[in-house]
Image 1 (cartoon, rainbow, N blue to C red):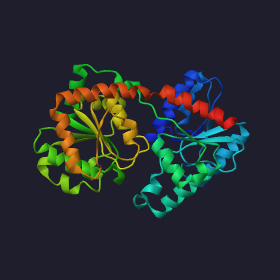
Image 2 (tube, one colour):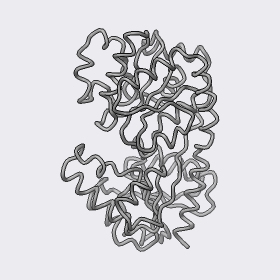
Image 3 (cartoon, rainbow, N blue to C red):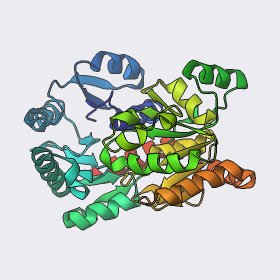
Image 4 (cartoon, helix red, strand yellow):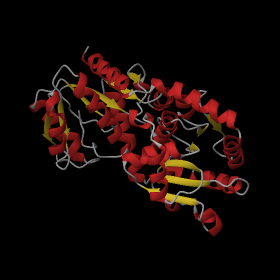
Length: 363
């Protein structure tokens, strides 16, 4: 497995959770191609599970990675190589599995430079034509890829991602209060977790919140990239009164992230495009009502356990904020349905199904 993105945010989460499960259940030896900075820690953590860690110093998204991984696969007698991103090496001497989380570079080309778009299309096309099996995170992404790359049809396996069990371990009131005090959170709040890339639709979120908070005293809290970095935030954040109700936590550690979820009144994912959409699933695991955009994979992940809105309508989103904030029966129903629905998203199941794809690639 190519684990050079081990420390990354999204794909790193995918890699780390698969490896944690593999260390428990894997019967055959696994070789991990790791970056120099991560290799010592990876070797120490997974040695007891029989993993062998090999350094690959090639930069991510480089020409070198397309060649050196193939050479190492040959040198170390690899039978099947799993690339957890769309960059599949050329000239592989073994079977291959590639995970494609989304094709956002193609669906939203305006968000990327010409070199980025060109590189992504070339790599995606190569992966779809050359990989023995392709893993995707949702049926939405499967259909998206098959429309764009017909040569992928018949090679794709949809495997939903897991949600860490830590989100479901309920914190005591003392721990929650300590979190609130540490971050100056004195009022109930709506939580947004993620980046501020254009497709995350931060403008609609802020406009909806501005309408909602004029009637209901509730704050907006973000974890991840700062909302103020969004190109769409200027007009709303120029309102000083509104700005005082918005708390930007930035990147926080795992313990604080769990607390941020469990202390929230609701969680919102307004994104226009997601291959899976972790935050609504994590909200359900944490026992918090989830609101998501009616777009891409979000309805698939939420099922009937959350509330959906038109991603272009700040009015509709503001209305959902008010419903969840004021309707106790609705809140209880969403929490109950979410707790049951999210049981299907486990990393144990994800890892088991991924190992089965390795076997399929070898067949």
